[in-house]
Structure formats: C-alpha cells, structure tokens
Image (cartoon, rainbow, N blue to C red):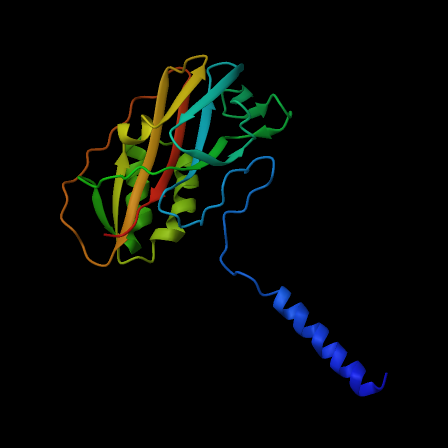
Length: 231
C-alpha cells in the first residue's frame, strides 16, 4: 500500500470518529441506573417538578419512614426511594439512610406529571429583584436561613436574567398530588412549592398572602418548584 492510500485511509477513519462524536447536543436530566430510572425528560420540560427536598427535624434521635404518594412518575430520587425512605434522623437534621448507612441532610426527588398550575394570584417580580424577593417570601413561608439559601441558589440562575417572573406558591394543588405519609407523625409540616414563568412585561394579578405555621415539635420541611410555560 503506497503512502497516498495510507493517507486516504487515515482521513476516512478521522471522519468516522468525528461523526460518532457529534450526536445530539441536547442535555438531558442525567440519571444513574439505581436512583434515576424513570423515563428521560428534558430539564426544561414544563411538567417536571424540580428539586423537591425534604428535611426532617425530630425532637430526639429517631428512626423515620417517609412515603410519597405522587400522582405522576418519579424520575429521580436520592437516596434511592425503593418503596419509601427509611432513615435515622437527628434533631439537627442529619439523616442516615438505613439501607446504605450513608449520611445525608435531605431526601431528594423529582418527578413528571400532567398537572396544569394556575396563577390566579401571586407576584410579578423583575428578574434583577428575584433574590431579594425570595429572601423575604421564604422567611414568611417558614424556611430557615439554610433552607432558604438552598432554595435560592437552585432557582436564582434560572430567573434573575428574565425581564419579569410571575410567581405563585402552590398549596393544595401541589400537596394533594404529592402526599407525604411520615411515621412517626410530625407535629409541624411546612411545604413550599413555587411555580413560576418568565414574562417580558408585567401582568396584573392579586397579591398572594404568605404565611406558615410555627415550628413546634417534630418538624418536616420540603421545598421544590416548577417552571411553567409562558403564556
């Protein structure tokens, strides 16, 4: 084989490699086989409940079981949900997964459903004011500083560069389709689920009243949210 044939062969091999390395550049919600074995959805899928995390604060160290009755498809959980979470919980919120022995600070899940959320009331917030707004709103909704910081650093990058964001904190529309069954029964449950959509101009909606129960006894806190399609 002369040097021209060798050169042609090398060029052909290089072309095949480049084609194979191209592929679809759409980034999906990556899932490990153990914890994220549901169907694949795009990260900006408007039907995806993102980052619900659950914190447990018992008054004394105790074993806790948490079951989620979700009217949708769980797409990712950590620790692995199995048929529910079983953890040893400390008053400071430190959790030990009784299945693996690993330590964590929250129970994470994501899921996908076909629920349509409405914005009959809420807030219209300029993107540049999102952080300040959330600091105030989350305090009123009962999150402590650490929980609120986790919430803000997850959502802020997606919201701060929008001209405006229409924001609503859902109540029974969310909790009735994502029911928590926890043993032993908590004394206080705080669940914050924010729905929001970007808009180029302000819209007129009634302001939402924000309140939370006082933290007493065994307290459970959850936060999550969903980006809804623009209207």
